[in-house]
Length: 61
Image (spheres, helix red, strand yellow):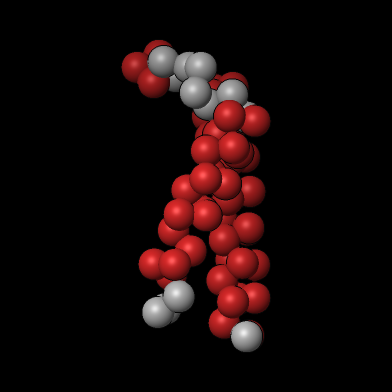
């Protein structure tokens, strides 16, 4: 857990790229639809899996 603060800047940059890739910056959140929800779920899944792999790799070292 002591490595987590060091991972935050890189993760934030990666999250920005994932959100851009799935087009989440375009929608208006007040009028979110099912395709928007699908994009959110997909982006969160990608980010969660990537963060899990990244933190597990960091803990092994």
